[in-house]
Structure formats: C-alpha cells, structure tokens
Image 1 (spheres, rainbow, N blue to C red):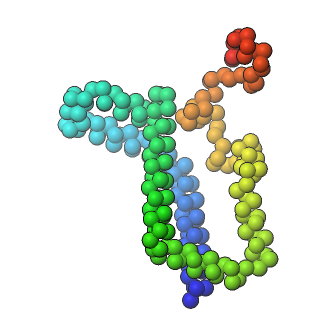
Image 2: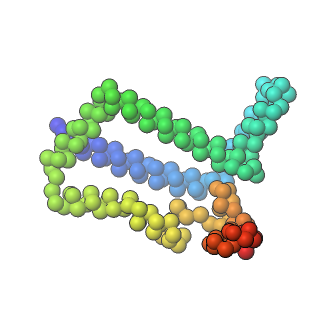
Length: 190
C-alpha cells in the first residue's frame, strides 16, 4: 500500500516538473504575444468608467499605482512583481505550516513517504540523493551564475534584456573601489 503511494508521488512529481518545463518553453516562445494581450487588456481596463472616476477622485494614488506598473520607472514593475511573488510564497508557506501544525493529510503523506524511503534506502539511492543535493550547493549555483549563456540556459540574461530586470548595461560601475579613491572622493565611474 505504501509502495503504491510513493510511486504515485514520484509520478506526480515527474508530471509536475514536466508540465512546468513545457509551460515555461511555451511562455518563452509566446512572450511577445502575451505581453501585447496584457497591455491591451490593461488599457481597456483603465478606460472603464469606474477607473476613470478613481483617477479623477484620487490623482496622487493613481500616479503612485501607475508608477508601480510602469516599465520606465526605477524599480516600479520589478518591485511590484517581486512583492507579489513574495506574498504568494509567504501565503503558501503559511498554508503548509498550518497543515503541519494540524497534522493534515499532507503531513501524513510526508511521513508515509519518509518511512518508505527509509525502509528501501540503499547505497545507490543515497548516492543519487547526494548527487541531487550537490546540484543545489553554493559552488554549483556560483558556477551557473558565472557560466556562459550556453551552460546557464534560461537562467542567464542577455544584455539586451538586462535593463528590464534592473541590470542596465548602460550604467557603468567601477570594478573595484580602492581605499585611496574612496578617501580622495574622486570619480567612481571609469
């Protein structure tokens, strides 16, 4: 019985990962079309009577919200999307914490899976688990961050798109700040 549940969990995990990979590839291939549709939808939404009344009644709030979603504003869209992703992650974490505290079925499933893994643990399984854990180590992540685009794949950002995530290639920063330069208060950019 527990073997069937563990097999089902492994198949569900495989299906989830496969689905996410396919969804991300589709999203990358259709990014321009999706952005265009979202812009059109947003423009129609802003032109509604309710939104026009809000714009007339609360102009300062309207300007603030418009800056949060504008591409050209410093950290406007990035900060808003980052905050939204953080809040969703916090909500998921809180829901899982509540499930653990109340011993909901998800925790019973976790315990069943853990018992099955302990009962069937072997040297080859532990080696595979260690190899997978090593892929998430700091050394591997640093290597991926510094590797060429061909190795990092979707995690690397071409310079033409870097300005959309806060890393504008037009901004020149000094490579190293020396103590003498710092004390003399000379130019920071070279």
